[in-house]
Image 1 (cartoon, one colour):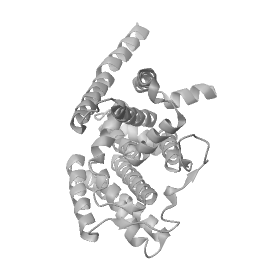
Image 2 (cartoon, one colour; image 1 turned 90 degrees about the vertical axis):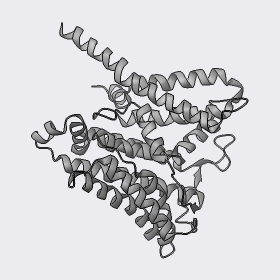
Image 3 (tube, rainbow, N blue to C red; image 1 turned 45 degrees about the vertical axis):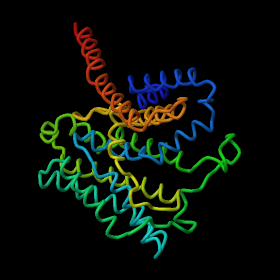
Image 4 (spheres, rainbow, N blue to C red; image 1 turned 90 degrees about the horizontal axis):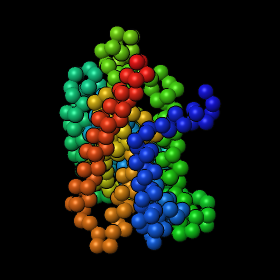
Length: 334
């Protein structure tokens, strides 16, 4: 297989990429006066994605591929920033470590409840979300200030003056979003854990008969989801210089929506991290389009439109393209 074909297959997610390209083309034509494809505008969209749940969608993909769900990521997102700010007053590196550890512990506890206690992931992660939100209010009464060069590392920018309109340069959060995406793609395609996720999500019982430790795979998936959610919370608190108590509110729903738009099926182990990435871009491009409209659209109507978009995306993924694939295979057999 050629290198070009390998790269193509790594990003291959038919309907999602097609929707992304069509959206970019149509938006560029309709809003030509807004300079949609300028470097500054593209960077702003990517920065919004990195700050507002893009990382969480990548973490959520691990869990969904295993046929489960994680509703606690918004709570992990907020708590990790608060923990980093509080423990960082002792030592900055300790703060970062404890912030990330928050997500690992939360993810493992949910995985333990799901695999060992046989509790539905919906219930286990929802209970964890309530617990985390309550814990935030117990340990902090107000927003926690993030100070110091080390703790505010994510506020750094590079390549100043390269992109017109980007004051100070490009935020470090943007390349980090790409880096995490590529890392997740590598795990899913080139590790036993990644292949195990698809096997478990496709048919857990068959995977168990093949000798795969289904419980271990699911626990690892929840830990990955928790870790990435904590990483996102730490990065946001670090870049903004403050950890707010309500950070990440309803971000779990945004993450699920981005996964669905990206073609990650919520019932079987089917989907790709590249699809999730393009789902993230589609979500925030549409979010940006709302700001271009002359009269504007209320937040309530934006939610309605996003809901319809998710339904359409899931419908297309589950019906149209699955039927096309089935007919194609049938013709090949005949």
